[in-house]
Length: 97
Image (cartoon, rainbow, N blue to C red):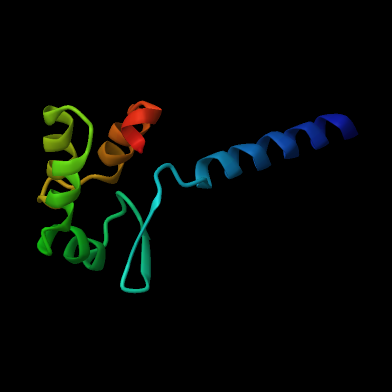
């Protein structure tokens, strides 16, 4: 019984840690930092309204359709954190550089 409770506690703790772990990376500009993909007015201004995200995508070594999806799900009214994270997670290590 005691081991069962311990095991259950360990499983719950690991599930919590896995679900709370960031799935993308941190973007920083002018001393402010945000997780890429999060819905934030300031992040939207920093990346999208400034035009910086378009410049980053132009230099990225990823397929054009993926670039368009990143822009659509990051900078338009169709923004969704889950789509951005999903796109990022399926990039190869070379594409993430």
